[in-house]
Image (tube, rainbow, N blue to C red):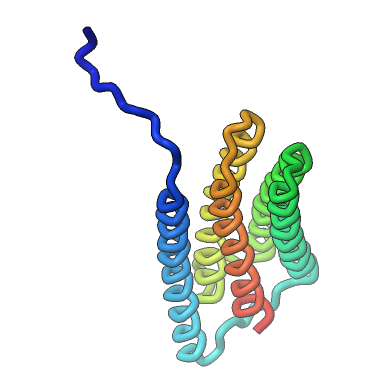
Length: 194
C-alpha cells in the first residue's frame, strides 16, 4: 500500500472561477498601483524641474514610439478577437489569434530595443538628465511586464493546443495584456506627447 494520500477529483465549482478572477484583479490592481505611483513621481519631478528636457526626440525615435503604440494596441485588439472566437467555440481561430498576439508582443519588445539603441546613439541616455532616467525606467519596467505577458500568452497557447483550456484562462491573460496596453498608452501620452 502506498504511503501517499488519495485525492478525489472534484468538479470545478463556480467559486473557483470567482477566486481566480479575484486573484487576477488583485494582481493587476497591485501592478496598477505601482505604475500610478511611478507616473505620480514623474509628475512631481517634471513640475519641480525648471527645464524638464533640453533634448528634443528626433524623428526616427518618435516614429518608432508611434509604431510601437500601434503594435501594442493592435495586439490587444487581436487578443480581444481570440476571446470572441473562444466564446463562439472556434478554438482553432482562437489559437491563431493568440499566436498573432504573441508575435505582436514580441515585435513590440523588439521595437523597444531598436528604439532604445536609437535614442542612446543620439545621446538620450539615463545619466544625461531626469527625462532620460524616467523614460528608461518606465519603458523598461513596462517591457519587463510585457515579457511576463508573453509568458502568459505562451501558456495560454499551450492550454489551447492541448485542449486543456478553460474560459477563465483566456479572461485572466486578457486582463493582464489589456492592462499592459493601457499602461503603454498612459506612458505614451504622459511621457512622450505631453
